[in-house]
Length: 252
Image (tube, rainbow, N blue to C red; front, side, top):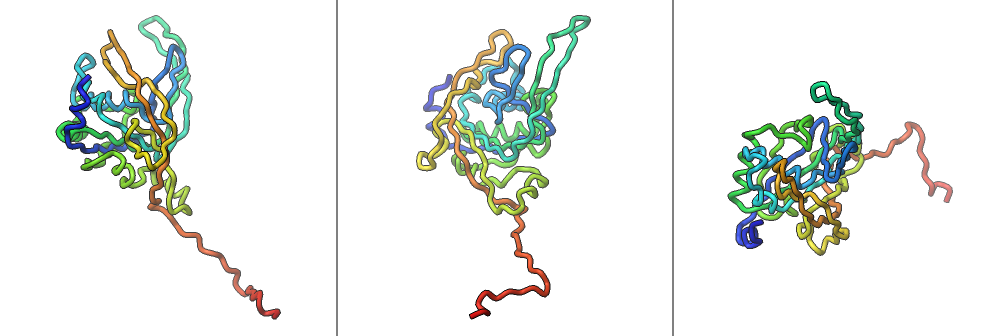
């Protein structure tokens, strides 16, 4: 791993990605025949996406990407789907498995790191070397994937990025001028005064993607909620019935 001074001594920028598509799957602890998904994109999946964009192979070093600070905003939770999966390898039947996906979900990913690395990743995302996907190869992203590059911290970008949900989903909540969104972030991104929920540990930091020695380490994530404006907000107008009026003071 690179020393922490590598991050602390560099000016930071934030790469903002919109992760949306027909299906997504963000596994972190799946075993054997049950392949579950987290409710938000994992750090290992984001690092893998960035590495693929830059053309890094599974055996290439990824320490610089693993040290990037990551926050995810759940803009549209989506619907959980279960796929009963069958497969064959030649004439041999593979074990049956249950695989879970999110349909019609949308997330904002906020990736904070040194200027030069973030700028290089931002260029790679729009001209990827390898195909990009949302957790599994069967889950391609919809465009645009890259939204912006901001100077400063991920927390500021989280608050200023508009709501990324689909228009139909925004219209479902058209009578709400502001909506509350879940945020899951690396420890230290959410300011102390915000009052983040107690941190929990997840094992989704990739040490190596090499199929011969695939390995993941632990990180602590914190959660909170933030409010953003609903661009489809429609004020509720009181309805009046023609010819019917009532003055409560007329009896006095």
